[in-house]
Image 1: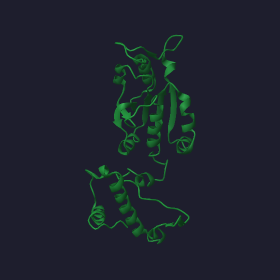
Image 2 (image 1 turned 135 degrees about the horizontal axis):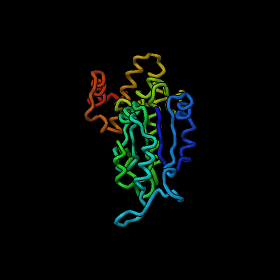
Image 3 (image 1 turned 90 degrees about the horizontal axis):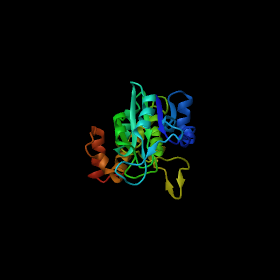
Image 4 (image 1 turned 60 degrees about the horizontal axis):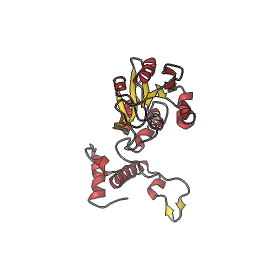
Length: 242
């Protein structure tokens, strides 16, 4: 996969892209992440990327001709152009899985008071990371990139993304490690039993329980297999939480 990030502040991406999983994915050539400075496409001596809004109002608006030139320079027939925007559809794990199938993502990071609306002709999708406002689109772009890249084949253990929270519209089961006892709290005996099938069922049940307690909305309109239905009945009707 190739990811082009269109931004006014490419240096903001230096550290996030050179650490941890994103660093290893690039070293293994599983993804090629490039930053593109939008200002390089602004004409004139001062390379102006924004201007006052028509009709008045506070702040400055990023120019459509500058953004359009940057997009067209990196865009290919395989590209999917994303605008990071608080007006976009909230990012969810299912969409991250879908975006991981693309060959080329172009991510536009906004700044100032927004974009000239005519830039939307260049955009395939708007994505938000939540109902709040940030200074620019750089931090949301980092979130999106991390969410997508870790799902690319070979980046993580093949089963790992499926077991994480939201991987199957359920929150992850609780995890434990050494020591066995900490502040009078002991690791559940089932995890020490070595019985893999019982451990698997316990984890699935705990995942359902955690989702029910913390994010019951995720359980709505979800298809359940027979095993999950039995476990839910034990939790809801029999009060069995173990």
